[in-house]
Amino acid sequence: MSISPGVSFNRLTFAMIYKFKFLPIFTHFFLTITLIAFTSHLAFSAEKYTEKPGTKGNGDFVIGPKYQIDPDLTDRGNPKGKNFEFSMPLADSKIFRGDDTTLDTKKPVRETRKIFVYIPAAYKDGTKAPLLVTHDGPSRLDLVRNALDNLTISKNPDRRLPAFIVIAVQNGGNDGKGSERGLEYDTMSDRFVRFINDEVLPAVLNNAEIKSAYPKIAFTENPWGKATMGCSSGGAAALTMGWFRPDLFRRLITYSGTFVDQQDDDAPEESKFPLGAWEYHSSMKLIENSDKKPLRIFTHVAENDLRAKDSEETYHNWVMANKRTAAALKAKGYDYRYVFSRTTRHCDRKVFEQTLADTLIWTWRGYHAE
Image (tube, rainbow, N blue to C red):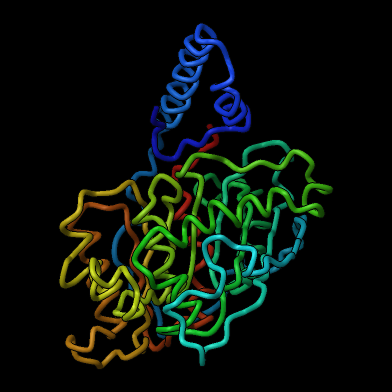
């Protein structure tokens, strides 16, 4: 029996399957029919969701050289949500234990990673919340919190955000090839998104402090209700999460994305993607040569981003990589938004301060509760 991507069994289904082999043959037959009907209903529910975001805000944009913070990213005195923080020991993970054979022993690995959660005041306990998972947590969480406080209660339908829950996940430590952070963010596979989906999200739902405040907290199973955001290698991770598992995450935000050859040279994925994230736009041209995926993608690069003057042969020019990524998304007909920021640098905070409210609004355009 199969189940459509993006649809997960609930506890009742697992219990039914567990007991399946202990039942008489006639009961087997009727239970089989029940399971087929149940999973067919779930699959239908996933497929019938549609939205009409339109094309407003799509395309290429240039900003700068002057910057100012968007008022919607400041504290405007609106009702505040609740903040939570807890830790996850790496040793307890089944996916990223911190002992991968590709790691450089000279690059420290964290013993625990912190998880930061913000539940906006507009969230109603018991509703299935949409999500935004951010990388390198708690980076830019302050701006996202303000955006939620201000825009979930906006009276302007064109400038309103759903009451999504933010989960900011700390990386596993260090940076670049041979690091735990690099392993998590720069590897071309579904390994990181499985870590988020299978380990981080359940940890949030089962956290005692969160459950005490929100006894009926729940997350949507709709992949259009799940967004992810990161900068640098965190941006690469955001694209990779959606690219390899669009059944889980479909709204992607990348600032100064590391769409370069940053994947560890010893990674098994090197045999299939030898130039790492550079393969998205060049060499293999994965975006151009793959079937269009159900994704909505924001990208950004700074004028003075990393190695902006490097030749193509280095596979490490961030400006070149992001321009090509945007061009590939446009040519393939994706809903995409690309921002080029003048006189700015890698992951420049002033770019976030000016654009993040608009980015979030565009990213969530068209979303509605089921």
